[in-house]
Amino acid sequence: MHQTFDAALEINLLHANQEGADHNRAHFDEWGITCLNIMSSPGAGKTVLIERTLAALRDRLRIAVIEGDMTTELDADRLRQYGVPVFAINTGRSCHLDSRMVAGGIHRFSEEQDPTQFDLVIVENVGNLVCPAEFEVGEHAKVALLSVTEGEDKPLKYPVMFQEADCLLVTKMDLAPYLKIDLERIEANVRQMNPHCTILPISAQTGEGLEAWFDWVGTQRPGRSPAPATEAHSSVSAS
Ligand SMILES: Nc1nc2c(ncn2[C@@H]2O[C@H](COP(=O)(O)OP(=O)(O)O)[C@@H](O)[C@H]2O)c(=O)[nH]1
Ligand SMILES: [Mg+2]
Ligand SMILES: [Zn+2]
Ligand SMILES: [Zn+2]
Image (cartoon, rainbow, N blue to C red; front, side):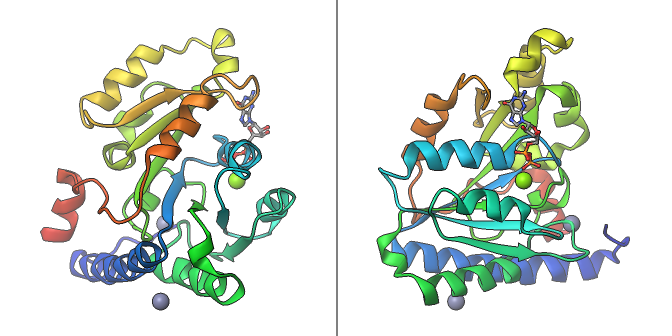
């Protein structure tokens, strides 16, 4: 996890990261690729969602994956079974991907493949609800997952992630009947800080909501900046 940074050091770190993210996004824009950054706490269902997405969309879209994990290629190996290029990044002790690490994956990708033939790069970030939201990697949109087992209060406790998200997937809806979970409260908690976020309840198990997710993916395009920085984000980089 992070040390408590000196504020000036943290600003420099985020500034350098932002330059790297702009570099990565320029590559994606030049190649006509949309990049999605998938984030959540560990176990919310990122890899299973990506598996479902590859299975459903790989005939329509050419997709590559950049897979971030602190150690192991377990998730990367799961995704390779779908016949798409997967670039694994082990972050070691870092609990998020940063733009420099993702640049390594992107450069490997463009050496091994003709990137102009691809439509979509999915980045699976390290499982963590905190800093992945602050370290842009060059994505065009941020996707946050919150599983029903995590509780309605998490958007309030981890606000940056939910302020920054362009799309929130409330996952494992098949488990909702067994839990005291109030979907409307999750939505209200997110809406009060992020009125524009698309919120989709899904279950990778039953398939509920997945068509809406695939439709949302289809609406995303390269060549646009992500949503304007929220107050919390810009106060970090401007203070
Ligand atoms: N019941 C249920 N379990 C799910 C669903 N999606 C993922 N899981 C389970 O949640 C666990 C973590 O999923 P995984 O995709 O590895 O999460 P990640 O750590 O966010 O990549 C696995 O045991 C999955 O089978 C779902 O929609 N319903
Ligand atoms: Mg995973
Ligand atoms: Zn981190
Ligand atoms: Zn480059």
